[in-house]
Amino acid sequence: MATNTADELRERCPHCLVRVDSPAEWCQHCGKTFDEQPEVEGPVGLGGWLILVGMGLVLGPFFVLGQIATDLLPVFQEGYWPILTDPASDAYHPMWGPLLLFELIGNLVQVTALLVALVLFFQKSSYFPRLHIAIYLGVLAFLILDYWLAGFIPAVAAESDLEAWALIWRQAVSCLIWVPYMLRSKRVRNTFGWPR
Image (cartoon, rainbow, N blue to C red):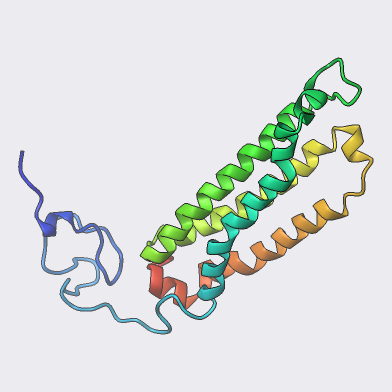
């Protein structure tokens, strides 16, 4: 079994990001040597609006964990789970169990995704913008689906839903701001190398 050299491990040209098929001194696509530094137009680094993105990534997991601690854990720790999921109970509805588990799992997935995104952000990985977009759109889909599923429970449907709608609209506005930013920003392209 042969060992890989540094040239064989090179995956993409640093200038045009085209995959390099074989070890070479220059890119067959753009014609530049691999020793040249790529030309960068515009801002580079974790500055500008990316500071707000970084702050959101640092604080986001704490916010979601706080929601879990105040909204979901009491259901499991204070004896509400058997009341809501026991068919003999007056508060029973067949959707309570799936809805509460959906919310718990969805929030835990969100915390995990935010922590992974935080690591990729500080590593300046080209995967970060894609994951960041997926998190924003995924949370919006999660909130809409959660609202829809909760509507099947008469006790929840009878309550005022202004808070749920506020969360959905806030996330939708965030998507309208941050998804295009990740796709069009020169700083994002220069810092993370994506999209090209």
